[in-house]
Length: 291
Image (cartoon, rainbow, N blue to C red; front, side, top):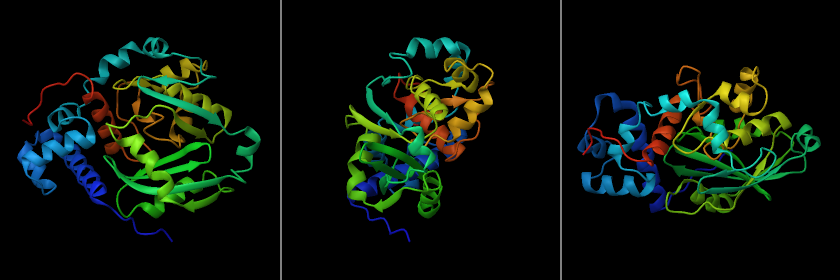
């Protein structure tokens, strides 16, 4: 049985900002003003503006301005060249994602075939801008990030446990909280974040390719297939993208359909839209109706 999540004041603010993002994502076509957004989470406009900018890393105005995904069209036209120029290292080595330096270690194919047998995975639930995050880690680093809303905790854990049925799971939020802070807080350095990838060699190759998509940019499944040397394997790429266990850090949310359509995302299309909007808004801001 999953324990009830306990929140301190900092966590309560994360929850408020998560609710704000859900509200803005659901109502962006009506271009809600600052007062409406603040009222939706029970804050004054002044405090809402301040907290949203601090916890999400962008202003509410900029976030709403990027929810239409218009910014993605030029990226998709760039296609494969966008990814090629973004690569700082070969796929077989560590990848650099702008200011995020990742140390990556992959499970051996033999260990993967045993379903993670002999691996201990610590996990904890933490509030974040995109709802509740289930953060999982082995002794070698972060091995899983899942997303949901309050009340989804059992379902999130069951989904992730099914990927490594042989592993031993320990609920230990005190061991995963520091990872959550580095992953989601705009003010916290994520340099030297360690990842422990649990997947097939093909999946790991695709996941590493996703790291070449720059922050604030998008690419297609076909472009990823080209990048990994399998131009006719867009469907297989899509399957591997869908199995990415470390969402947000390994940016499967940056992959769109060939027409720019918002395709399915394992943790919800609305959450994918919000993630893209947050990242794009951290680039030079665009105009919007929120003051």
